[in-house]
Structure formats: structure tokens, C-alpha cells
Image (cartoon, rainbow, N blue to C red):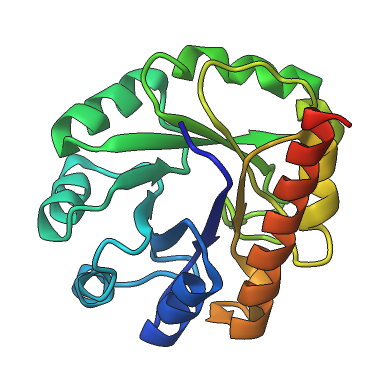
Length: 226
């Protein structure tokens, strides 16, 4: 079960990796998607993960990967979790989990209440669900990391059997309100802590993690009552 989980996604340098770890992030995300400005090679991923030394969870983000890519990633540097951010079915998620002998976090795009019906079929086969904003309706739009958000009220009170991670357009300025509103104990950010696409800002990373933890604390105090 995740608890107070803050993931910094799109890590692509040793400096941004260290900034996330020092800030107190729970996890770092490494992107393997050629069209993303945050895409990295498996060779670079091996260098980065070699510096982790168990200090943070390593999540590899893949988009509709073929079997070869799954095996390459999982055999080369053994991520803790695979984040599947494409159109993978529950059956495909189960195949990937077995093939890579790895835990799965499935990302699902949310725009309205009807989209929540996508979640239940995945619950038996994944460890976590990440809810993200739908990509913009334009040709060539990236599946994530677009800085877009969705109506967070849609997931208030959502009762799942697996942990929920909130993503999509979060920033150091907005993450506190998002956590307080939804009650989630997991958040994910990429573009919201960048100077420019693919270039992380250490100060924004620090602020995002700090604001997340403050909001988690307030929610815990609120649940505890007087």
C-alpha cells in the first residue's frame, strides 16, 4: 500500500535525480517514449538507476511497449514498477507483469464521470492506478506530460481496492489543494516542475514535494479530528 507517495516523472539527468531524492520524493519516473522530450535511452537509465542505491522507487514509463522493450528495460536495470501509459488492456497489463516479473501502475485518462468505468477491470492485475488528464484533441498529442488537468472532484470519495495516484497538470502551487480536495495519498508530476519541456527545476521539485507533504499532514490531522 502506498502512503504519502510523491513521484517526480521525466527524470533525465543525474542532477534532477539527486534533486528529487534530496527533496524527499518517493519515486522517480524514467520515460521510454521516443516522442517525449523526456525520453531517455536504456543506457542512460542504467547510469541513473545505478546512483539510486535504494533511496527512491524507480518507475519506468512505457507506452504500448512490445515484448522486446519490456524485456530490455526489466532485464537491464530492474525497475521497481512499470507505468503503462498507453492503451494497454487489463490482459496486456497482466502479460507485461508476468514477462517482466514487475509490479504495474496503469495510467488512465479521465475527462468525465463516464471515464471512471475504465478503472475496475484493471484492479485485479495492477498494483496502482494513476489518473491523468486526457491528451489534447490534436494530432500527435503526447499521452501524458502535457500540463493539462481534469476536474479532481471526479475522484473525491472514489473507493478502490488499489492505491490511486493523481496526475495531470499539478504544480507546486496547485498540488496542496488537489490533495486536500481528493484525499489521495499519491501524486505524480512532470511538466509542473520544469523550466522548459524536459528540463527539471530543482527548486520546483523541492517545493512540490514539500507542499505535497504539508497537504498530506493536514488531511491526516483532519481525519484524526480534535
